[in-house]
Length: 198
Image (cartoon, rainbow, N blue to C red; front, side, top):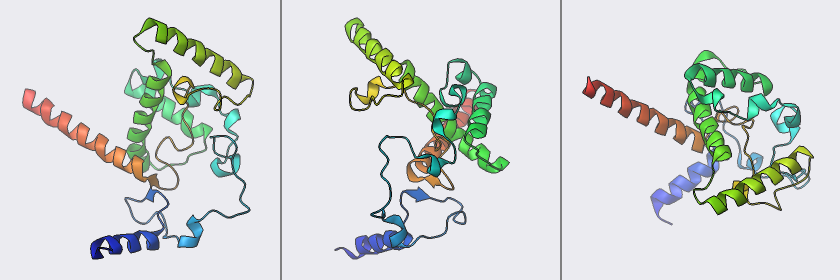
């Protein structure tokens, strides 16, 4: 193995990141390799939702207005902030102001993705009719508490904001940290364009 690659692999093994990154370096202690391996006796979740003991709340008891963004929730900064506050209360997320500012950008991006997925309709009328019918069937079965993941493709299933929609606890997941950096770059580019126009 190439020495730089071997060093990177060894460093990753020592850190045992498990898909988490900490931009502040102090919020997550380094974990040993053993802590990242699943235990044999650990229960395996049967649904794609995280178990209640992992998220601290019963997901089914979370109000819909805190987990399903609407057009009205995304129409302005204030509306998205109100959605973020409802989501934080519903999932018992305690954040200081600086952390909320960072995580709000990730939350907004994810809320827009969820809303875009839930309101998507294919351009082809026949395909749109099939998609909307399957979406309605899936929503009906979900409301009855039935498993729909084996019957429908993911793109027919409605999405919701989950307990990690602002980047995860206690640290940002790697993809959300990367997403945060991407959002920061886009905002910086827009600011430069706005200044250049004036």
